[in-house]
Amino acid sequence: MTEQTGGDLLVESLAKQGVNQIFGIPGVQLDAAADALYAQSDRIAFTCARNEQATTYMADGYARSTGDVGVAMVVPGPGVLNALAGLATAYSANSPVLLLAGQIDSNAIGQGLGALHELPDQTGILERLTKWTGTARRPEDIPGLVEEAFIQLRSGRPRPVALEVPPDVLAATATAAIPDYVAPRPLQPTASDIDAAAALLAGARRPFIYVGGGVLASGASRALTALAEALEAPVVVTENGRGAIDARHRLAFDQLALRALREQADVVLAVGTRMMTTFGTQVNTGAAQVILLNAEEADLHGPRTAAVRVHSDARLGLEALAGQIGRPARESRGTELESVRSWLAEQFNDIAPQREYLGVIREALPEDGVFVSEFTQVGYAASTCFPTYQPNTYIGPGYQGTLGYGFATALGAKAADPSRSVVSVSGDGGFAWTMQELSTARKYDLGLVSIVFNDGFFGNVRRIQKNRYGARYFATDLTNPDYGQLAAAFGVQSARAVNPEQLAGVLADALTANEPILIDVPVGEFPSPWHLVHEGIPRPAPLAPGAHLVQQPSFA
Image 1 (cartoon, rainbow, N blue to C red):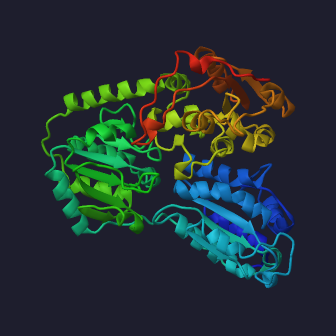
Image 2: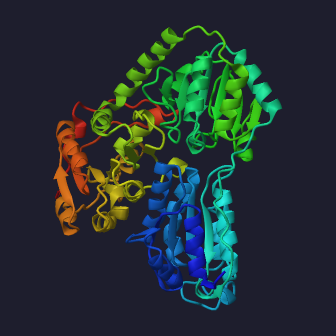
Image 3: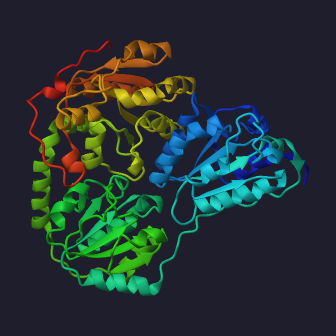
């Protein structure tokens, strides 16, 4: 073995693990890593963002659209702090993201000497938002730490990890072997747990399956569909689980269907989901007995209650259950399930304007195209009813509810496969967080279609101020740029659509062109979706017809 710098060992180790793309911004503490990446640019592409916040968003988009690890790299201190929002989103959405974090010189860590970009206990900060964090103290430590990072990323519950690499360690030389590729290490279920769960399901008359992102993370869609068909059990997908089963399947249902299905359900199999509401309570499944199947031990216990707990990878657990149960004779539940669909259609009429826009997007987007749903009025509706046909084609912000993540995250999904159609939906409020990444889209020719629904307000907060605080509006009005001129300033195409019909034409052309484009959609007030998203919120009075098409003042 020949001596190599820590930077070279880092890049060689990443390449050995299959990394072919890094999202980051170079800086003085990363110079030796940047030089190593320059030498290996034919193996690992580097996408340079315009703000560190976007690097972890892009890595998250890469990870969730491919099912593989997304990698970001930033300098310490302010670079790490900027990247934390994306790291928190990845944590909440169980996304396998590796953050390569710069540090100060290793002998100064923890000394409080005021070194450039020093943070008090940067390692501790990262530990709060990761599954595992390591710090390299010598260049020869780097390959083993990269290996451990990928062991963590490819086993158990997927969540982000971080590796700190001080500049002196990156610049120093050493000889070290590069560990082999780390294969996924899914958690096997125990036979006794499978026996107990299978017995309960086999005896159930009206079971249903409630799925989260763990089904997608483990590649369990085929196993899920097979078990559902064997049990004649409807499948209810959470937002993180959208795409786990083809939305067109006769047993596939949106999360809202839970409220109808639980009325007569006797057993619920919850797979790869925290099984908790955003208010910190267990999902209400009525009187049904609950089977929890999860790779995360903590998500099998309190405050959750369950008749059976199965600690397992989702795919292996579902396959074991299917093998144990076989294909018992089951009566069709077609009539019952059609009545649930009719009930859902009636509920979704409350957000017909949003669904009209979503229908246009779904019609234009190929089956394998990626839809990235920002927290905006159309995005809220998408979390309850956007039809998703394949795994890894719907990306939402998870329980973090990160405003402003969507555009940059969608860029990461597009960079993962430039030939794949990707549509980002943002509001004018959230888009402003990362709109400087139009520069990144243009620089790397990322043909992302970015739709900004522009009402001139922080719309959700304004609705709350209107309904709960007597229309005492505070800091919710926005001064927006001319989006056409903004796009042109970055060399990006733009278009404008004032209704769903116009959007349909613009979107079809944009997806065909596969060029970066910003589409401005001026809108008025949409009906509230919150009674559909969160149980217990009263159904609001309907808005006047066409209210969503009333254009607010706009310079666009």
